[in-house]
Image 1 (tube, helix red, strand yellow):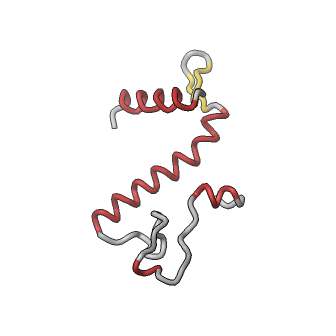
Image 2 (cartoon, rainbow, N blue to C red):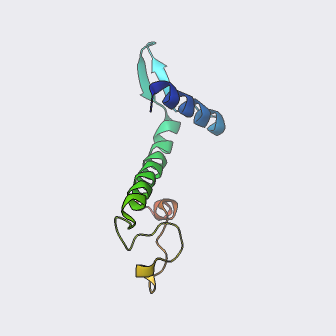
Length: 95
């Protein structure tokens, strides 16, 4: 993505959250805010899931056949409970 596109998306997310994710120190140094530190692990998981989805679309198989993330049942997962989401893991202190 082009830097202007990324900046626009960050600005939109900041507007939605009502918080700045970055601030400028000394007019030139970009620093992550406390809100940015909180949002970052969620962003990492979202982008990781996006990469996994793209890989699955290309190959037709999830990277880990037992890690279906849709909450539904996978053919290889007929006798197992659906996997936890990142939020459920984070709620238990597991990231």
